[in-house]
Length: 475
Image (cartoon, rainbow, N blue to C red; front, side, top):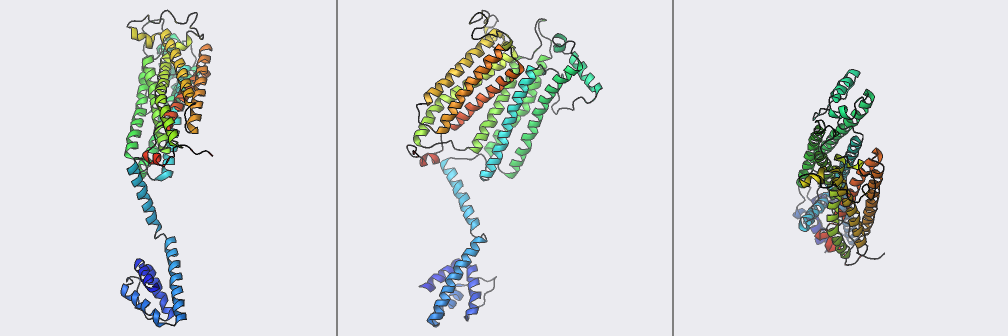
């Protein structure tokens, strides 16, 4: 019985047979010499093992024990040398791929968790960089620095390095409508401040392009990024490159002579809104993609939590759209300098609704160019946003959901209240740079919370749903 088992064992492992046969010479057996290049044939294995009954019982037992012990040690040794590890890894990879294809869970990044972590960090860093660009752009606008540079090159250029260079740039600025009507008599030192602000904003954007492109190329070369993710990131990169063109298109509108001598030179509110909306779109795309890379599945404890998240999802999406519309309306407030009018709250001056909200023709122009209408719209949208998020928070309190989702909704409610407070404070303080910048950053922060909420309450994959209990276990 033992002999037949050993023959079967030797047939499955030729290397083990070679090692055992070479060791038999020390025990006095006459077996066919086997080289490392020649396989251990079944006939030779049988000859070796068929001589076992001819031995004395004590010798036979000794040989059997040595066969078994040596065989176990050989398998252990071969396993540690990696003979079987590669196979197990391959089986694991194939199984994971099969499960992915079978259940519909497709990762945006291949090559395992470490690759997903690296790509996720890069995307979150890129999104944070865009966030800082939005904040820096707000400071540039509030300090009236955006029109200090009267020309633009896609690749950028060195700043003025000598006094002569500064005088040349200053002379260019003196030809602009802003200098003639707003900053006439400005000295060179004041001009240097607004010039450096605009220059920093432009170069920070170019640096973002390099910071995005180099890791993107590296991850593509390593094969980490799937085709679907590659197309998405390429689109975001193209939109970022176009953002520079949109920015110059916006600035150029402020370098033109105003239609009336009583109007201050300013950029077109439409172009400002396009510039800010594009920045918000790039940020949202990067942040959502980063979340999808590092969190391919939403948090879920049970099927009851999934049903609760589905109810939240039906409310979170329209509320998120409302937050975005309110932020875009803020761009028109900035483009029309509407924040420096009606610096009272809750009334607008002495009335609730100004008399001239429909004074422009055609009627639709009032919603984008009329200072009174633009500010009234922003007040209404901000109030509606706070009420909508409050309603979402109240309705979610009665639902069974994952604790992470519950805490996120509470944080979103707190951020909405803070953003409204910042907006009112900015208005009453006549738009100081600090509060105005904080209000713009707050708008993007609130939008971030809504993106995170919508991403967290999305539907899990079928493979995850199959593993969830009906009700979460109480610990």
